[in-house]
Amino acid sequence: MKVSLLAFGITKDILGGRVHEIEWEGESTVSGLLSHLSRQYPKLEGLASMKVAVNQEYVDASHPINPEDEVVLIPPVSGG
Amino acid sequence: MQQSDLPFVHLTEDVLSADACVSMVQDDSCGGLAVFIGTVRNQTKGRAVQRLDFEAYAPMAIQEMERIVQRAQDTWPIAKMAMHHRVGTLEIGEAAVIIAVSTPHRVNAFQACQFAIDTLKETVPIWKKEIFEDGEVWVSAHP
Figure 1: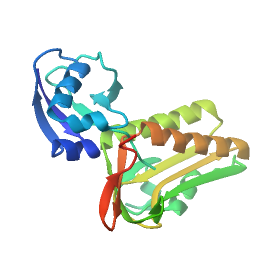
Figure 2: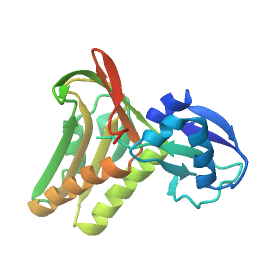
Figure 3: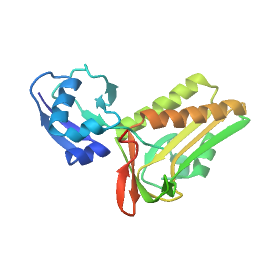
């Protein structure tokens, strides 16, 4: 599976930029993506939480990912 | 942008205006108008903050802010509600967020305002980085 991924907040620093092309073997789901990212970027494991938005909606770990989806890493939010 | 043209839910790099938010929600049917202003504090745990940098996943942030306003309107008898959030670099004392709400009776204005800021802090994809003299920290990122 291959998708374009946007990273915000601290994930932008950990991944080294806002926009990424991510390719991984295995499940085409949010959990498959996160497993791959955790191996590539171990610092992600240290965060207080990690959500993923697909096409501007929060989704859970089992949510499928398609190549054309807009996938965004949402580390702990801190607006306000 | 003229103040009168501002949307009720607004994400902007421009300086926020409490006067504009109050004017937007003022309503003759209402006896209560509550305003919450979240401002940039000069210290965190005794460490001097120099400024804050805010960034947002803008389309989803606006959508989530609109959902909060809708949920508040579904819960309380709200006449009008405004939620403005700023992004970019903010100096000490500047407003990062302003929420204003008008209701027939004051208790609901307080309730809706508190609900809105509490929920914003949980669900809206906006992040702030505190800049110190000797470093910087993404707020809440680590346990």
